Image (cartoon, one colour):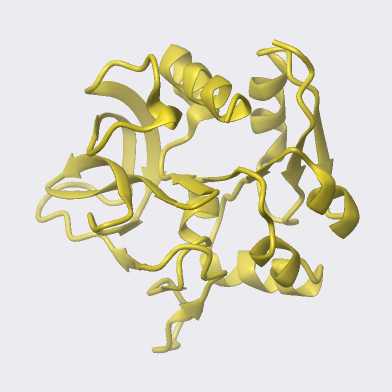
Length: 204
């Protein structure tokens, strides 16, 4: 692929190197930055995330990235926690607090603690993803393909769900509104299917 102008947002709390390597393996030049102008001018933006929603939102606010991310018009892909930060709020909060964590509000919805019955939490490992409607992000990916997950919170299946996964109950494996896309799984750790999804995103 040609060297697309892609910027990975340096949120200050993400395992960014694995996402950068996965993108570069596709022949895409990726910059890692928390510079507002560079993010705004990028052709495509990836919002990665590892850790907790409160810590990530605190870092984003400290870096004054909130309004920049909210005004982006180019394709934006949130990965794992990065997807969760795209909705309005998360039940994941600081220890001992009962209030929800305010997120970026790029896509309507909320993040809730997963109800998994007697299954292990967090949901960790490979699981099948089923598209709920045809969309370019999952082009040339078999329905029911396996992706790699690590999470204990999730967005329920709703009107903005692009793809779903089941772990005791169905949850959103991917969401979308306008130019904002989010995936709960880690495409950078999901072998050929993950590589195809990143390639699809780079061609949006």
